[in-house]
Picture (cartoon, chains in turn green, yellow):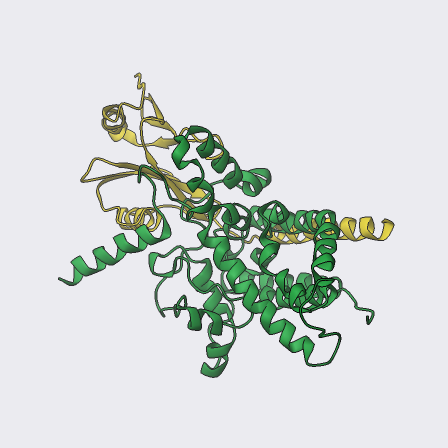
Amino acid sequence: MPELFSPIDYAVPAFIILIVAEMLWARRRAPEKYEPRDTLTSLALGTGSTVAGALSGALVFSLAMWIYENRVFEIGWVWWAWPLCFVLDDLAYYWAHRSGHRVRWFWASHVNHHSSQHYNLSTALRQTWTGFIALGFIFRIPLAFLGFHPAMLLFVGAFNLIYQFWIHTEAIYKFPRWIEYVMNTPSHHRVHHATNPRYLDRNYAGTFIIWDRMFGTFTEEVEGEKIRYGIVKQLGTFNLLWSVFHEWIGIAQDLWSAPWRHKFSYLWRPPGWSHDGSRDTSDSIRAQWLAGQQAKGD
Amino acid sequence: MTAELLKLAGSIAAILFIAWLARFWKLGGDVRIRSEEQAREIAQETICGFDPVEIVIDKAGMAALLRDADGRHLLVRRHGVQWVGRLLDHHNEARLDQNFLTVGTGEKTFGSVTLDLGARAPAWAAGLRHLNIGRPHA
C-alpha cells in the first residue's frame, strides 16, 4: 500500500486564502454576500465537523477494512483504479446526497450544510457534526466490497470534497457549455442551495453533474431569477448548537407526539412530511408553485 | 495527538481571524423594509403562495406583519442581512403597549419581535387576538 498524504491538510490554507479573496470581492462589489455572524457560524460548524470526523473516522475506517477483507475483486493499486474509484465514489456520493435530502433521518445531519441564508465559500465549510450518527457512510462504503482499498476511498473522497469547496460562490456566473454539461459548477450548485420552489431538491451532484442529468434531477439556473438560499423554514438564529441539532430535536419531538403507526414515517419520509398533512414538503411546495404559475398563465 | 491539537488551535485562530476581518471590512450591511412591495416580496419568498391583502411595516423597517385573504398572519423580521418569517398561529402571543406590538412566535430561538406600528398597532393586535393567540392590554 502506497503512503498517502491527507489532501485536506494541504487544502485548508488555500480555503482560507480563497475565502479572504472572496470577502475582498464582496467588499468591493456586494458587501451583503457575507454576514460576519453567519460566517463565524459556518466556520465553527466546519471546525466542529473535523473534530467529529476525527472521533468517528477510525471506527468507519475499521468497518471499511473489514468489508474490504471480504472483497469481490482484487483491484489493488493499479493506476486505472484511481480515476475509476473517483468516478464511482462520486456516483455513490450522488445517492448519499440525494438520500440526504429525501430521507429525514439523513437530512437531520445534512441540513447543517444548508442552513445558511448566504452562499459563499464559507458556506462550503458548513459541515455536519452528526454524519456518523446519521450513517451516511453506508452509501460509499460498499465500494470497499467491490475491491477498492478504504485508503483509496478516503483519498478520492477528500478530493471530491475539495472540488466542492470552490463551487460555493456567487462570484462566478457560468462556464463554457461543455464544462457546465459535465461538471458541477457554481451555477448548478447555487440551484442546489436555493429554496425557490422550482429549484428545491435538484442538482445533487458532487463533482460530475452528469448524474443529475442521468437520474432526472437536473435543473438549470434561470437567468434573472433571484435565488433565495437556505432552508424552507429558515432558522432565524446564528446559534451554533441549534444549527447543529435542530432537526434531530424536531425528529425527537415528532416521534414523541405522533401516533404509534406514524412514528417510523417521521424518520424515513421526506423532510416536512407530517401524518396530518399540516406541513409542506419540497414536492408539495413545488406543486403549489406550479399551480400558481398555471393559474397566472390561464 | 499534539499535532492534531495544534491543527485544531490553528483552525480556531483562522476562523476567528476571518470573522474579525468580515466585521472589520463592514461586510453585511443594514437592510430595512422600505415599502409594501418589498414586504410582499419577502412574504412570498418566505411562504410559497402567500399573497398579502394587508401589510403593516415597523417604523424602523426591521419587521412587518402581513395578512392574507384567508386570515393567515405572517411575521417577517430581519436576520443579519436576510429576512426570516413565521406564520402566526395559536402558539404565538401578542402584547400591545401603546404603538408597540410585541409578537412572540413560541420558538425560543426565533424570539419575539417588537414592532412600532404607530396608530395601526391596536388594530393589528385585535387581528392577532382574533386568531386567539394574544393577550393584548392597552
